[in-house]
Length: 310
Image: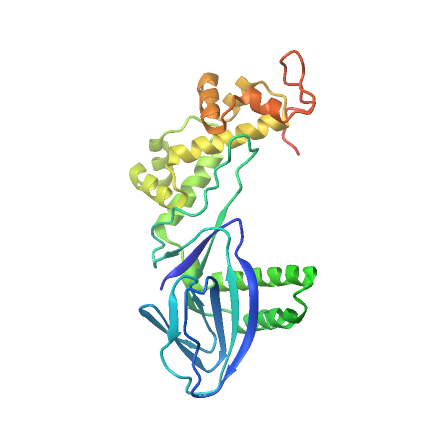
């Protein structure tokens, strides 16, 4: 069953919600490319809906997300009294469809830092099944009931804030379904590789070391990481080392050469070259950029200890 995968931040955001009660003979409305995701949760009866060439029977305790860019239509009339919640939402970030195996996991919003920015925006993926049986239907119904009850006061800022909070709970309950949380072998290998690289980033590492640590061929690991993170293991390692270097540049008064060694670079010149390519400035210039009172003698006068800290 297809799943919808969002790249966050920014988070998908709530727009509006409602409750519908339909008798026998009624149908779900036909619409084309409405520009918003439409979540349907049936609490009684069954809705018969098609989206392009797929057809769904959304029975009690089931949820279906209709895409914002496709044609959806009724495939049959309700045969009994049918009650359902509907919720419209969208995202300012990127999203995409995945198959059962979650293939083609790269893409989405670019989380690389713009030159001069302190750190990358830490993105993550929200993967929810497009059609699923709810794990906790009663809990889902209650959260949706609260969302609908708040609609009459949705002109108030604090109410809109509360609705956004409740909507995140809806997404988490959808993601809790077995279809969305089932581990994919390639994704598991990529996550294990990333964790190992983060643990050992200070050491001199090769693709062979990574393969021996995970008991997988380096080519397979590279393919998994490319699919999951959009980069090779060594590219991932380089970016992580540079991120750690930026922390040390801002939070310590360590010399640039020592920082290079502390984050796993064997040569300070190579560290500087990589840093300039990534940030557009040298490490020393980067450090000065965030100093309130840079020293006139060309030093790095940050009045902190050599340890971490905020």
